[in-house]
Image (cartoon, rainbow, N blue to C red):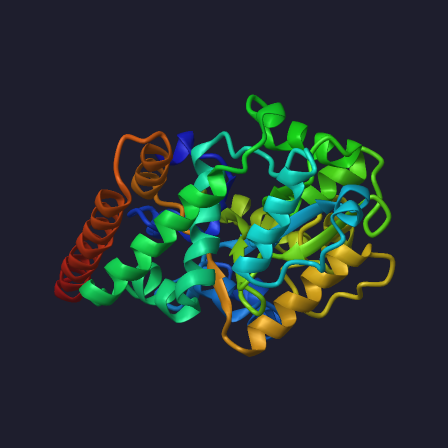
Amino acid sequence: MTQSQRPDAAIVIGSSAFAHNSAEHFLQLDQVAEEQSWEDVIPYAIQATSKHKGHWISAPFNNHSTNWLWLNKTLFSQLDLPEPETWNDLIAVLDRAKQLGIPALVTLNSDWQQTQLFEMLLVATAGMESYRRIFIDNKIIETEDKRQLLTTFLRLKQISRYFSDNTLKSTWNEASDLLGQGKVLMQINGSWVNSELKNLGWKADEDYLCLRFPDTQGAYIFNSDHFVFFKNGPAAAKNQRQMARALLDKEFQRDLSMVSGAAPVRVDISTKGFDNCTKKNVHDLRMANMRNAVIPMISNPKLLKIVSDYLALKTTAEQASELTLALFTQITIDNKANAGLSDAD
């Protein structure tokens, strides 16, 4: 793409923004970052997805969390069970709903939703450090990690047996409406569900409940969107930097969170006027940031295919575990090779 063909700005998903060789084409935003103290107010894990070789080259503007359970409050009250905190609690809730003839769980009809659930289950099963080691640091411990992945895939198959037929052909947002209407008990999806439910007229704590996915309490799996700005000359750069300032402005951050369900990407925004689910999201982000427990979702198309093929019964749990290990082992090899090339340059 020539300079004349480039847009001034583009939106990218943070965890995959710089997994290619385009970083040198992006405008550096260090000046704006210093003016607005990005280093002090943006969580460390999101900073890591916004920088290249120590320079800010994207403006993160929202922060969704993926590891959530959404429950229809009226249906859940019929179960006479406590809110699920562990894997066994969750299965007990799903079994009880099935016994009462209540459609239990929204069907995850797309590969990205299925893979988000797989990621939650890995954190719940093996813990944050294993998730970070396999998916982020790529430091595979083959025997241990294969065992944890196998358990995770088996749990994924187990929970998929509770998917409800009445949501089999629904998009995630259509399924959210069914949850609000009381036609299904539970949805597993990110914080964008809160925005959808609010837009449909349902109220947090009155019509629905928001809980952390069992056994992932304390972890904050995030999906942050970013703007990158292409180097299109000095005239464009002035306007591009002004746009970056606007995106990280406190009032804009607050307004965006109120309509989107995302937590502000800044941790210094007042939560006055937020509903309880958004307040919980903001609180969890701040606590997780202090404990180094903010971890990115994995936007890897090959992992999406591994998970979706497994749920489509094209592979076994054993095969899916081996494919996942092979994928991230190869990523480790590729990263080392690319680092070597960079050092040579």
